[in-house]
Image (cartoon, rainbow, N blue to C red; front, side, top):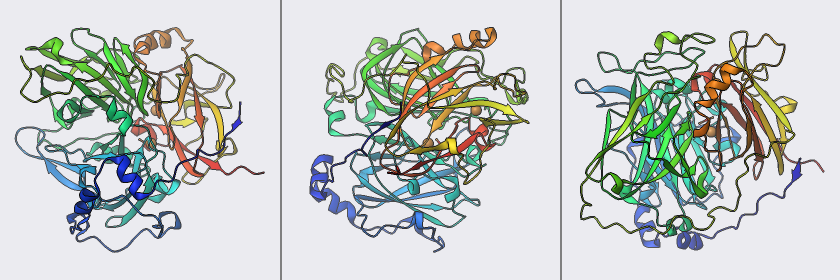
Length: 540
Ligand code: C2O
Ligand code: CU
Ligand code: CU
């Protein structure tokens, strides 16, 4: 099953060519290039990451240079006292200023708008009182730019990222990745979206502007003083309030027109079973790694932490009405009744409870804003790939997910900062099938019984197929979510319910180095349900 590929050939775009392709005028670029002293850089120490990995390369000419800062802040979430959060703020230092889109009234970081071929330099300043590092979730970037926890920087330090955007149009995100502290840092608010777009995508005529709506779904617990409450257990963390784009009891006014909804499950542990309250099927146009070849329809969508899904919805069917996106009940969420490792005490709103997420109030008639009617959506393929489901095969590697000695493990191992086992070493250019099994090895003393959303850094994979649990109770739980899987597209995160098996097809291209694979239940990740894998150059 191992095939050798020559590394993907990329056309080297000249700057002029890039400008033409990206649709930015040279004039706009020059105007944007005027240097403004960024508030983000004021007052920070001059200590810089000196590791060879992080060094700025002298011949890297960025198309855009961004100052990104993580710092404590206060936002209004509930009436009364403001809530202390940690948030990302960004500013364009040079290049097109519309690359950074700040979001008002939220702890979420700004949306970064990238285009394939764009060379990005990001100067990250850590103004938290603890170590941090930023990871670009879903992006195919060099090792030094991936935000591995060994690259953390201390308070007041700067890390410089340089990479060329090579990813498909779609919805990605960024968040912290310091080992043991990813859960609490993301919980305090450190997360932001990345939108990637190109001319091909724009030619599809999908809804744009205020009809291109991000919906970042997160659960939080706020105390009587409106402050965030966090706790951790081997089960994870579940908040008792559902926030969308940082706001509780979310409502959104929309026009009776088509919308693109970009949904990210930005929660630490909670899984959502998304559905329209009147039972209308959801039309899916994209998954983690971008647009699907053809849209697919689902009665509901199972969305685990870190997964993205994009919907195309025509609100004219509900003109003058209110329609709610809700999370339906499911079983096997793992926190009800304690489960392995307990954690039931915090589950005021259990994983698998039914609740509303966001209410859309649809206007009676379209506002005067003109809307360019979109083309019959994706009549032809927009990516060169074909879906890869139901091709169960002999796997190159198998990873079992289970609890051992009170800790979640992958093949019985927990995270070690630099360690890579021989069976975690892969060859650049190879294509492999990885099988994940969410149960302990037969005859072992290991425990299980929880869902694990498995995420692999550095690439997008295809899902080859799944095998249901054999245990009757686990099978019954699985039945309550399995019709909501969207396995057709490019993925970087895949949910395995307890007892389930999944096979993934991966190709290791362009970059050697140390990357991560881990459970994206952030509490599991922080407790060590994470490992390195290394991509090495082929030996001839
Ligand atoms: Cu979204 Cu390793 O993370
Ligand atoms: Cu990632
Ligand atoms: Cu897990």
